[in-house]
Structure formats: C-alpha cells, structure tokens
Image 1: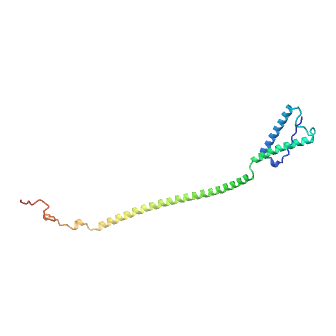
Image 2: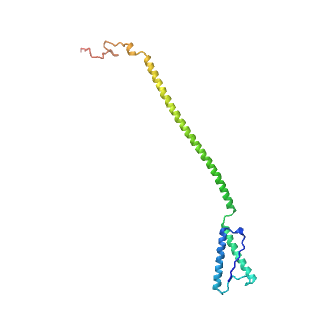
Length: 184
C-alpha cells in the first residue's frame, strides 16, 4: 500500500518550529488514518488519486489543507508580530544610549574623584605650611620677648623700696601688732 501526502505551503510561512509541527502533524494524521483503516472496513482512507473519485479526493485534500492552515495560523498567532520586533529595536537603541550615558557619567565620576584627591592633598599641604608658619611665628615672638627682657633694666636691683620701721596702723588708728598693752 502506497500512501503519499502532499503539502503545498509557501516557504515564507514555515519557520523551524512550524516545519516541525507540520511534520509531526502529518505523521500523526497518517498514523490515525492507517489505524482507522485497519480497524474499520479494511479499505484504507488514503488511496492513490486514481482509486478515488475526483470530487472526494479534492475534498479530502482541501480538508487536510484547511486543518494545516488552521494549525499554522494558531502557531503564527502565538509568535511575536512586527510590533514586538519594532519594540525590541527601540529597547536596543535605548540600551545603547543608556550605556553611553553610563560610560560618560562613570568617566566624570572618576575625574571628580581624582580632582577631590588633588584638593585633599592641597589642603593637607596648606595645613602643614600653616602649622610651620605658626611655629616660626611663635619662635620669633619668643626671641623678641627674650631680647626685650634682656634690654630692660631689672626693677629689683636699681630701685629699693623703703620699708616702714614703725608700727602699722589701719584706718581707725588701732595698731596691728600687739606690742603695746593698754591699761584698764
């Protein structure tokens, strides 16, 4: 028994997935037809074109093609359309732009970090200079103070302070020492 199936589907509609589905479907249909023909009356459903009347043969061919068309239509409906491809292109373009922006911002960040390090170094350098200048200033002031003190005449040696020899009195005329005794 010779069984021949023909499918006239344009190649533009067939992708790898739809081709596999088409082959699987045709094999399954062939198995179903063979099993139903062996179980039933003994006459196969798929006969060579010469054994069937032309109308019946074309009807079966049209039905098979319609089934195949419906299956392919369902497969194509599940696949993404041109809108998805267009959206994907937009996303790719946006991703490239954002990547460029990220690189620019990253280089700016590196530049600012290095500039910050330079400023910190400059601040530290100026702080050290200020501290050295303060030390020099204080040393100079000490030297000037020492020179000033050397040029000054000492107060203790040149001027003598006269100390009182008599009794000391306070505002009321009472003596501060108990040298004199009063008679009562």
